[in-house]
Image 1 (cartoon, rainbow, N blue to C red):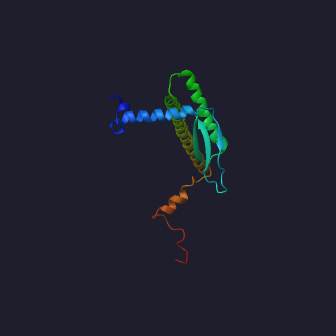
Image 2: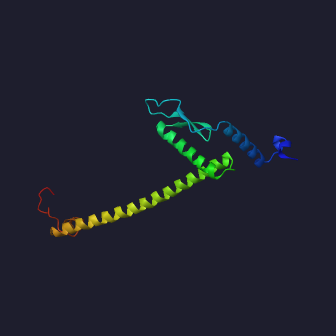
Image 3: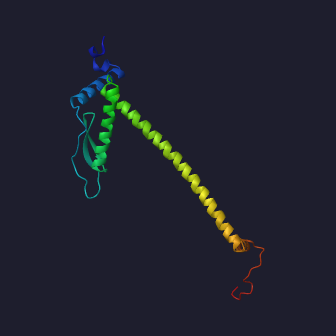
Length: 172
């Protein structure tokens, strides 16, 4: 018995998933068009999120954002350009396959950039630590050059056996 001849309750999870994919693909295919975006609402004075309608792969989407319109338009355009590039090389790919491939490519780029940024952050932390250690060393050298090293007065204050300079103070 073929899956379409079975009652919906008898279909396997995979068959139900494939049926949903086919419905989604046909919906996307009906509205294939270039990336067009329009703002459907404007930002309120309080900076609240608003809705921006975009078309990606012919699918109309309403995006809630607090970003500028140009930002959202640029993102939709970038995704559509990548989809178009893949369409030229993967001619037999379904719209879902193209979308997943673009998503994977973008995820890989994001991951690579995050790793690069993390590496740069660690590098900068190391440089900052080296600069701080160098600055402290120069301060110590300067204090030593002044004659007392800056430690003698502090050592006397911390040492209980050191004579108290205020022994002659009548207020005690």
